[in-house]
Length: 150
Ligand SMILES: CCCCCCCC/C=C\CCCCCCCC(=O)SCCNC(=O)CCNC(=O)[C@H](O)C(C)(C)COP(=O)(O)OP(=O)(O)OC[C@H]1O[C@@H](n2cnc3c(N)ncnc32)[C@H](O)[C@@H]1OP(=O)(O)O
Image 1 (cartoon, rainbow, N blue to C red):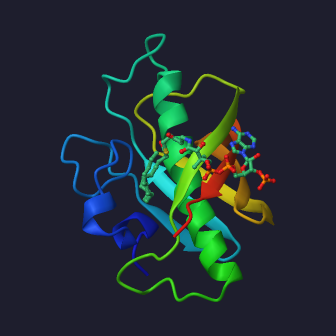
Image 2: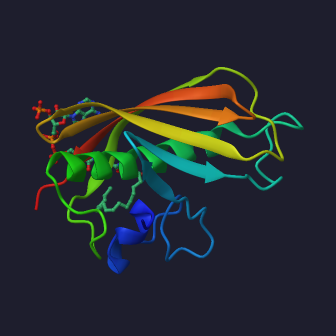
């Protein structure tokens, strides 16, 4: 299966965090795995907070883009829309993002971000997220994504 972000139409694929058409961005890729969504990302050394640990703003960026992609995917799944189609028909943006930084996030490690659907209430889609490094939870987050009107 393709990454959720690779299903965004070309004119909406410039997001700094996840747009496939932004050569300077992070180009985060999110996949559906069973009941969850998963992204993997190894930050460059320039994203330093305290030496040896990853800058929190980057972590927020990863959770932001993981969250909106997950929300769109979960909404598609709820409506039995095929996630293998060329363009994703549901578009979501972030209305609210809460992050708890639990432990310093080590540099030089692959970060694994997982998302679980919390609720779909009309256009509001809530997703719970965790970010781990070497199996240790370094951050948790919750996003409220809003499905855009047609
Ligand atoms: C940003 C423009 C994008 C344009 C097109 C993009 C297409 C997407 C396609 C591919 C994605 C690629 C990009 C990935 C993006 C990565 C993640 C980001 O960085 S996103 C950027 C940061 N986010 C924003 O800039 C949102 C700015 N805010 C808004 O545009 C509006 O406020 C919006 C769309 C979120 C809601 O506006 P309303 O007019 O459509 O809807 P209302 O009626 O205000 O809200 C709907 C429901 O949500 C609740 N709600 C809205 N904001 C809330 C909040 N902050 N907290 C709690 N509830 C909230 C409301 O109370 C309402 O609830 P009730 O239906 O009455 O129960």
